[in-house]
Image 1 (cartoon, helix red, strand yellow):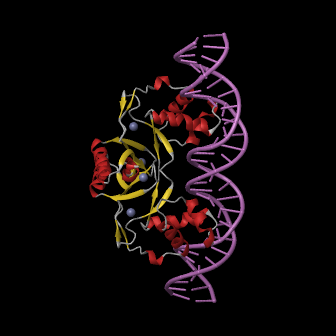
Image 2 (cartoon, rainbow over the protein chains, first blue to last red):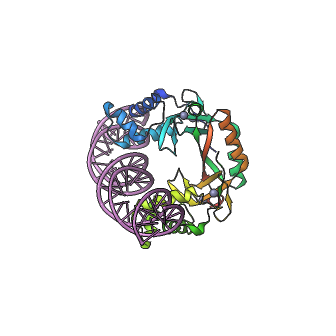
Image 3 (cartoon, rainbow over the protein chains, first blue to last red):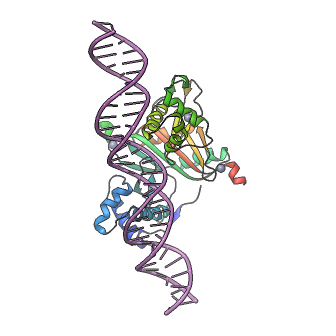
Length: 139
Length: 139
DNA sequence: GAGACATAGGTGATGTTATTACATTCGTCA
DNA sequence: TGACGAATGTAATAACATCACCTATGTCTC
Ligand SMILES: [Zn+2]
Ligand SMILES: [Zn+2]
Ligand SMILES: [Zn+2]
Ligand SMILES: [Zn+2]
């Protein structure tokens, strides 16, 4: 799998990228592209493409993750750090909708090993776990 | 995580379920719902909902898997067996589009363990690996 | 067989997510 | 200044998924 993301400081984002970044930063839960669009209409954004372009860049920098099973986006929990791991997995609570990012190196190793065993050149992995978070089990 | 799928023989499918099942069976690559619809118009299917309903049932029986990162569907490689594991992971070749199902118990254990460590009650997991299959690396 | 129930099917309209195509603007550097 | 690449703006459209409503079919009971 490819290496970590380096040196993509959130300071030198473009206007649209910064708008999307801060909208995600302010959200407890993942946001869809059209949620972001609605949230940012007041800032002058009008078209889905403006959101998707910003998201693509932010994802490329490793600042944002896409959750495939939700068609939604979250900030990387390492986005303030110099070097960000690229082995993220996520738990997604089906009751409250909250998402938690995990970065487990033994999982990354196991996936790499599984891929290698079948001759597959792994570039990127998607791991999304659905269930109930601790809080929602108690409730 | 929940248990395996049992006793869902492909023989007692309804007409629409059987049509979708056999369309997937005949495909090397995953098919989208609208691909299936186009393939089955000649058999009298006209609306997306007919496809989605059949897919939902087939997925419930463990005969079909949904690939979240492709919005597409594949037959389970264990669909001829009595008991089907529910710990599937997939490799997806970004060059040729072919998908391979893996069922690795140590991966399932590790995911269960990761979830448990954070108090998360795991119900279902999505693992999709992107990269190049052996054939496409050679080419 | 009539009635009740659960599962499956048919159809049109609508909702949600993502991309294409094309023109314009901005930043950087020679 | 002019050239170039990156980013932006906008409209239209494509791709994926569900809602609402109604009909048909099978099964079980009386
Ligand atoms: Zn991250
Ligand atoms: Zn929860
Ligand atoms: Zn399977
Ligand atoms: Zn390939």
